[in-house]
Figure 1: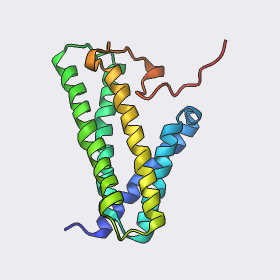
Figure 2: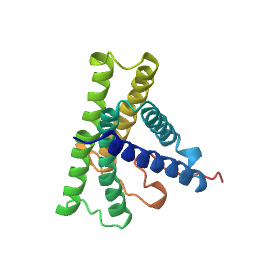
Figure 3: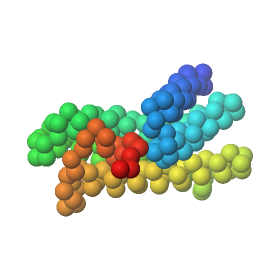
Figure 4: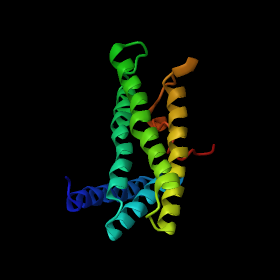
Length: 183
C-alpha cells in the first residue's frame, strides 16, 4: 500500500511542473495564444492544491495523472516530426503515431471518463463545492482531450485525412502558439 505521504510528494512535484510550465509559456510569449493550456494548467494546479490541503482524493489525483503519461508519446511524436523523420509509411513512424493514438484513449479518454462517472454517479462523500469544481474541470479536460484527438487524427492522416507537414512554428497539435504578425 502506498502512503499518503508518498502520494503527496508526487502531487507536489506535479504542481511544481505545471507552475514551471505556466511561467515558461509566459516568458516565451506563448501565453496569449495558449489559452486552452493556461486553463488546463490552472485547473490542475487548483485541484491538486485542494487535494494537498485537504489530504483527500489522492487516488483521484493519481488516476488523473495517467493523462500525463500520454504526453510522453505526444512530445516524442512532435520531436520526430520536427526532426523531419516522419515519413508516412515507415514502420517506426507508423508504430509511433498508432501508439500515440492508443495512449490517447488509454491514458486520456478512459481515465477522465471514469473520473467523471465517479463524480457524477458514485461519489457521495466529496463536499458539493469541491465535487462541482472537479466535475467542471473534468468536463473541460474531456473537451480538451477530444479537441486534441481530432487535431491529431487530421495531422497524422487517419481516416482518409492527408498527413500535415509541421514546422517549428506550428508544431502544437492544437494550433500554433506563435503570435501571427499582420503585414
